[in-house]
Amino acid sequence: MRTTNSRAYFKSAQSAIPGGVNSPVRAFRSVGGDPLFIKKAKGALLEDVDGNTFIDYVLSWGPMILGHAHPSVLNAIIKAAKQGTSYGAPCQAETELAKLIIQALPSIDQVRLVNSGTEAVMSAIRLARAYTKRDSILKFDGCYHGHADHLLVKAGSGIATLGIPDTPGVPKAFARQTMTAPFNDITATEKLIHKHGKDLAAIIVEPVAGNMGVVPPTDEFLPWLRMITKKYEILLIFDEVITGFRVHFGGAQTRYKVTPDLTCLGKIIGGGLPIGAYGGRKDIMQMIAPSGPVYQAGTLAGNPVAVAAGLETLRQLKKPGVYNNLERKSKMVAEGLGEAARHANIPYYQTRVGSMLGGFFTGAPVTNFASAKKANTDRYAKFFHGMLQQGVYLAPSQFEAMLVSTCHSNSHIGHTVSAARKVLKIL
Ligand SMILES: *Cc1c(COP(=O)(O)O)cnc(C)c1O
Image (spheres, rainbow, N blue to C red):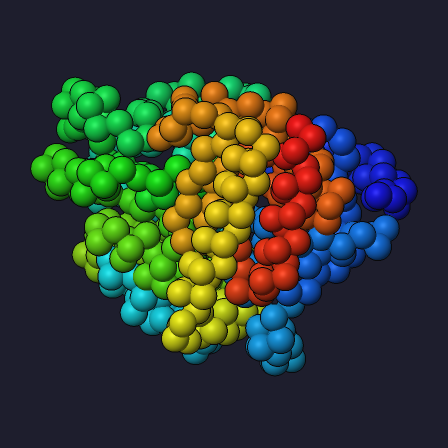
């Protein structure tokens, strides 16, 4: 595979941008080698600057559930842009997107649009602290909630991939306000809550963990979190930045029938443009300025172009059969990869919730971050590069999800599976 242009562009980028990338997960640090520079993308395919094409299972880390450059989303973007790209005053499309989100997610009575998932989570935590008049929060090891200070504690993927423990630059006093427990571990979580419950403003969780690879919740975990948070008057925040409109049109909360107090969204709701949102119970949301005293603002929040892309994406997703179709395709990918690993006699622990797929190179079950970290990352690196050579673009880290879009065709999936057979056989 020719990578001359990517290598030249990366060299140049490194002189101007730290590490040559604007988000660390884009670098190939954990799998080795240099990142590919992308020239364009269409449907399920990425094309790099050397003319190589790849079937894409990263999908911009989640947003591109309809595939890249979806015609009706593009039209919506162009139409909106022609009307001006930002007003700094309200526009009607913002309400339309808000109402669609409210209809889709049972826990949301009101929603505020922001510019990224990070911002959504940061704002939801501030709101929870204001509402409960408590300072501490509890998160789960390996869950990523964006890069706000108090959430960069045991924060999964990007950080795990780079082997950075807890990031410099976060004051100890902030980190001390964040407690952590192992995902899916009711006993350990209960102990912490028993001791510190009265100080906890919120428990935040990815209802399906997607930043330590994909780790589904056990049957008991989410209902138990709902029960215990009610008992201690702690707010339950679902970070559905990946899972929202991905594992179900109504998010993981609909799929698992557990209703959080607040929900964070991002990725899919912007259809590939920068956006985030947080919403929840009206009595809580009413505390946000200008209705209430909790300040949170944004020059570009509710940006008309991002809102148009998001609205059109959600309208497409709302059509009948979309999620059944995604389920069918995703099952084919998972079964094909599982079969390929068995055939090659390679231990491979698979997880899947809808179109979020996990595949860990370990024989033992993965239920939390500690068990995820037992996966053989050297083997993943070889698998990743082998697949790349075969024209399949996977996440450059063992601790990320593999995502399927509505554009992945039977032939894309067939190619992916036969590529995996070839690559796994020689690992
Ligand atoms: C991606 C992600 C975020 C952060 O969103 P950004 O838009 O990258 O700031 C937060 N939480 C989860 C679960 C995510 O996957």
